[in-house]
Image (cartoon, rainbow, N blue to C red; front, side):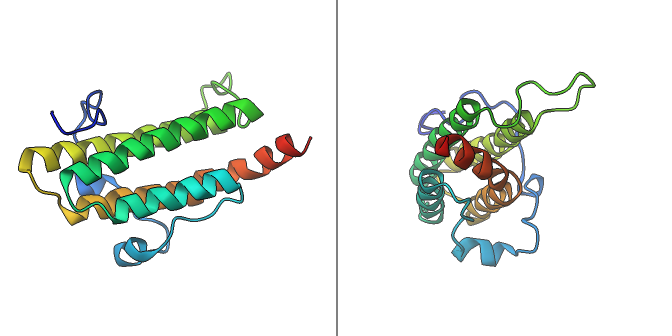
Amino acid sequence: PEGCGGACASRKRKLDDSDAPPAAGHTDEEEEDEDLPMVGHAVMDAEHSALGAALRGATTPAALAAAVAQMEEHFAHEEALMRDVGFGGSDGGDDGTPSARAGHVADHERIRDLAAAAVMRAVAAEALAPSDVKAILAAVADHTRRYDTLYAPAVAAATAA
């Protein structure tokens, strides 16, 4: 739909708010006012901070679409960084288990789907549901805690060499 900023064009699956896992040990109210966790990599931490601010500031469908586009750029940058430093393997093991990087990217896809569905709902309704913003912010914060903190040591080691 028009106004998605491209964020929902390739997302076919519709998700509702219940598809976003709760951030471990945090309530939605806490997530709304909390900065995204820091991972110890200056550029990624700055991007996380800017993304959190963009999501918290999204009060219109257009603002949400812009925040989701910013999230897409961050995910692409993060995936390139992991690939460049050789973090987490590539396609996974011979037994079909995903590598750390493949699992990380799969969680990006889950959040992309959640965000694209929220943008589609907001554009269709010409209004933004605060619960959608909270769900995306909670999913990104949880992802940062569970996935992003794992690559920081590998990036630090690779850049120190």
